Length: 459
Image 1 (cartoon, rainbow, N blue to C red):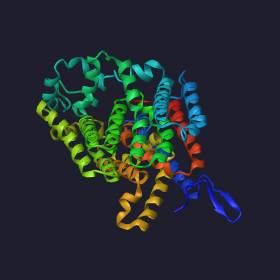
Image 2: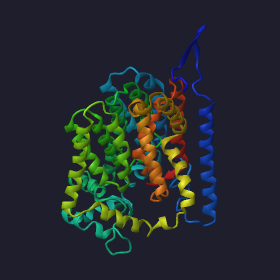
Image 3: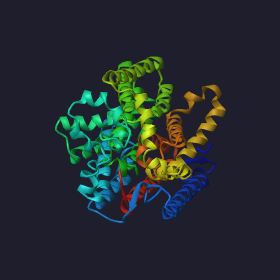
Image 4: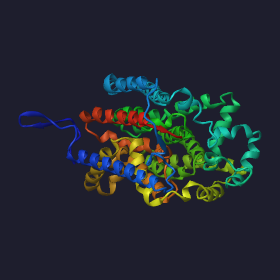
């Protein structure tokens, strides 16, 4: 395995190591080829009238080159992180680093949203007919809504739920109903809540790494979570809340103590009722439990109890997850999914993933795979623990993404749908050589800026 440090010692003293090698550049070229192929094939299929239902395939967006008053703000935030922020992250006190990371992630997400303007970038995103806020005024009785939720999933009924509400368990709608009940109703308040909750992933993921004994990796990964290209979709999207909840649940599962693990289980149980796809969160959850240094069984039981408790409450209220999922599969193929060709999206989804996770993804996963192979050879049966969180967590996230992709239930729009897994894939960035990180981070920022200024993304 190639050494990660920036310097190697030779007979003549320290020698510089290139910040990247041919393998990294080859993977980057493969990423570029995949993206070009997805765009070109998408253009051809759209012109032929194939039902991609994505004007800028592989992204669910429209081509609209533009700038806005968020443009200079985004450049300023990126410059601050790439300049003094990157160096400061290596030595800052832990609490201050987490607070600064969250604030910087909020600033980055907001500035990207404001490229489209306050109204189009924030306020109106969650108020269109397909979104959750469209249904909030009609929820006068929450218990009644939960009891009858499944009956309204199928389309072409007088009282069918709107697209996003029907496609998720009732927890997603409940979040926005609760916000409305406490006086945070309307598009602006809901959008800002999405931004602030989504940005907590920049805290939860490093906390998880530190709790699992990878404090240096936590500091290395945090800037990549701040300048996440996927922040383009974290701004004013329900998936931002989903990302924050899942990350916090996994983080609590990693921290010592069964009570904290129970809290993590409660969050993960609620996450299961935010999106049916979060059944796949079981993969990173198992990885976190395997990496805990003590009381794994107690944490497993406490976490499982939390998930079971939340599921039980929803069942008592009249919603059964498994019944809802069966109806959602039917609803899925009542809409665009019936037209969208699996043969295109099964690989074009990965190009969309690259734009959400950034170009660092391939090289980082490559180095993670090399580390895994070397560790497996050296450690044999003890490799699971020896691999560590910078290998197991991105591997678990990659497994979840692969399962979602092959399932056919994620044809398009994965740039936002897979965000809860993207933040864990980026843990692999800790495996990059320190001299390379600034360059890769700059590539991340440029990716987000290019997407947001060339396209008008649709939540």
